[in-house]
Image (cartoon, rainbow, N blue to C red; front, side):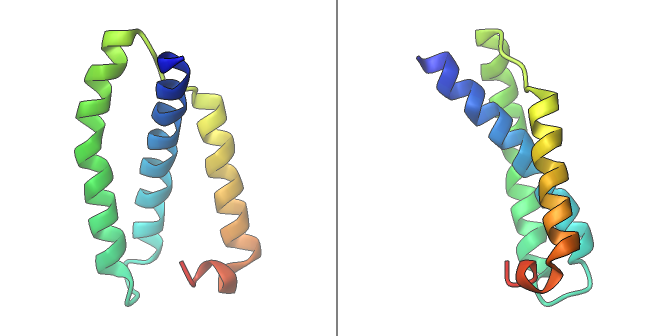
Length: 87
């Protein structure tokens, strides 16, 4: 049970890291730039801790699932830029 939940969290962490980093770049010239930069930094700080734990349990990020979620987020930002700008 723990491994299943931790696997979900690993995937979620990878998704957040990729998405937030991308958003920080896109929002660099906006009023929200500081927020997205700080959020990116927080995700960067989490990476080594989760990496060590994932190695301990022999778990890896499901790259396909993460890439699919990132693609969906990017698509939503492209199709609904005004709604997504409220983030």
